Image 1 (cartoon, rainbow, N blue to C red):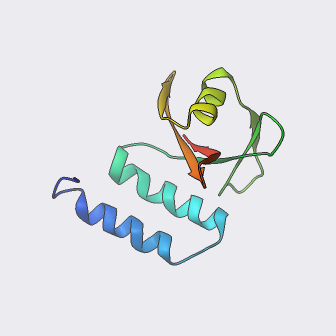
Image 2: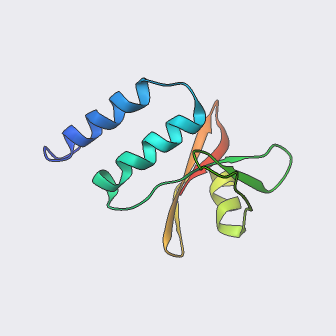
Length: 102
């Protein structure tokens, strides 16, 4: 359960995300609220079907990257894990990993 001090920040995040269905806008709003919740930036990456490429959502410029071993493991295992200075969380839909929150 969230601590009382974090509950308002989580509520603000939920309100912001409920106001749009646009994936890029969801990513921008998620990142805008991440600092107050986790003390850092958060990026949402979607996996490209049939490849090891991921595309970032919410950026002003289209950005993609090749998934390295840590990122591929998060997608395959559908479990969060540290990866260097990052912490990776899988985005799962219908029991399939569709992306990663960095």
